[in-house]
Image (cartoon, rainbow, N blue to C red; front, side, top):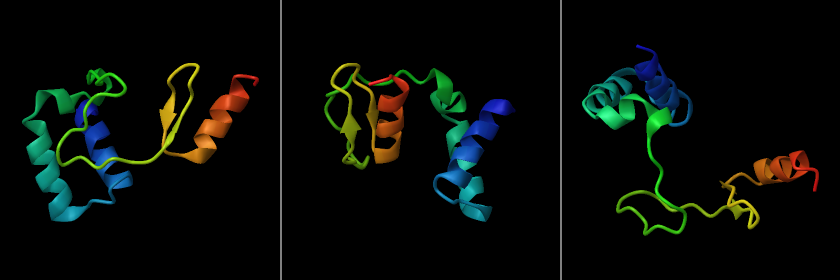
Amino acid sequence: MPNNNRVENHFRKVHCFSGKTLQQVLVFTSSIPVINNPLEVELLPNDSAPIDRLPIFRGYKRRECQYLTKNKKRIIIYKTNLNY
């Protein structure tokens, strides 16, 4: 199941889940079709209302193309790669 591996890798690497906690998350997420393929999730438009219970992060935004990130290094690399 490659899609399930993506979800598992995300929770292992980003959230450092393992063991029973990871298994509970995988059982739960397997019942939600949209999570089974995270590459096909339709994103909300920028400036949408916040979703309850999801954290809001400070970050960086490119005005020219609406690129968003919370990582300062990524916005610098992105800008550099655009030859600005």
